[in-house]
Image 1: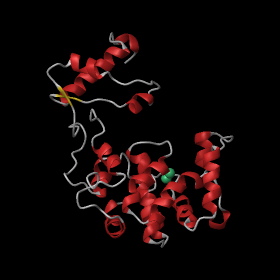
Image 2: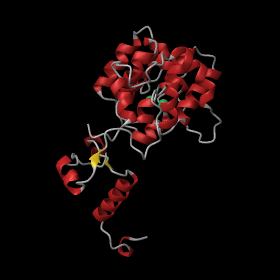
Image 3: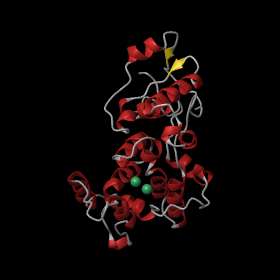
Image 4: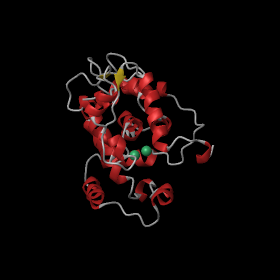
Length: 256
Ligand SMILES: [Fe+2]
Ligand SMILES: [Fe+2]
């Protein structure tokens, strides 16, 4: 359909979409955080009073968003994999690669979790975000490796056959240079006792994503069970330093 065939302007269509979403929500008003608008190039947030004035008989959403897959009361890491991670293929392919390569369970888990920052909510600095989410629940070797793959993937290590990914030349251009904080992270990491664990994330990172590869989260349930300290109360409710991050993934449209 071309623009002229539709008398609605873009903003009218956006309003109509908002309206439809509101209906799916029933009597609740879901709100978008500033970050969601910044992805559209705008620094703005919906005004609470204006939304309330437009919907005087509705309350703001302060819990689960009915448009999203339902989470259990005591969510596990597997529940987040199944209900909140937008794509599992890359994580499962990398972990499968590491498993077949005979690496330790810590390396396999690090590969399985290395990009959960991207899969669940943010690309920028995803290694740091992902590491912070899992830090209270895994061996420090695993979280350190996830954090540091953010930097290491930009630097070759011929000793293990890791080259600068060709995909990055396609994606970022041949003249892209990592920022100084990434270079500094790499320099520190080279001397660290867990360097090779993080490097193995890069080695097992599958840059040519194969949508048809046969991978299965069930292959990793036992490794997760042995290496991820699932809190009894459920992720998000255990008062850990990253519990709020898991809660935010659970309830991304809560008003506060
Ligand atoms: Fe990554
Ligand atoms: Fe990756």
